[in-house]
Image (cartoon, rainbow, N blue to C red):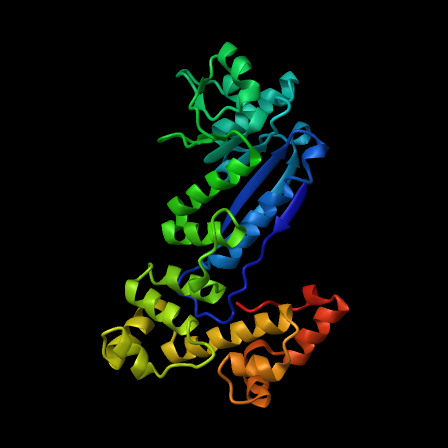
Length: 332
């Protein structure tokens, strides 16, 4: 079993809630599925980048060697049966019984591809409805499974859901993100991982987390987008409030109450986040980056950069060229 602890460092944001850990167990139908299961790990790593009150842990399991375990172990866990479109799940009786127990114990299960055939062994009295790939439609009909004729199926009021393919499974997972964290975060995640076209007006992890924290408050969202659109030539707080039809005091108080951080501090952090990204992913000279992020000079950017990230712009640029970027902590 592989165990991935997908960290969620938000040191730059004041906490308003206690972080809750959620566990995802991914069952593989053979070692050949291990490579493709990495997309599940990447999905939850991306979610951890964007959400601040939860931390997701992913366990990769080889199905025949995994027992159902204590029922309490599966309380609150999500079980993903990572099948493919070319073969059904293993037919070993012991294995099927064991995985059927997981289906009945886990708080949320997702059957992908050929794993949908496990529904016939889950001990359900009603007619199971599922998203079934065309390769399995005839076999599914024979064993009493009803096809929903869609790429994914979220069982209403139930715990067992299905997706016809691995790609549609990712879309189904974003639907659960919407249920757990709200549609705004789900839509941002879809853009972040490429399931929909990215919304450039909010291409910032810091902005996403603050908007989520505010409950997608319209005024908070508008002022953040306005700040992101004016990074090169920062606006005064009075100009921001005038443009949004609010008083300076009202805007600052609303922002602080909804996000837990000050508006002016956030504006500075958004500019530094942009500078970090430009330093890490482009060849722009530091002087140009300072101008592009509203700092008066490269020296001024350097001082703010060191205070925020405990490193220097030169260190970020140097690690990029030496292939050591993984040793640096990305801004949060």
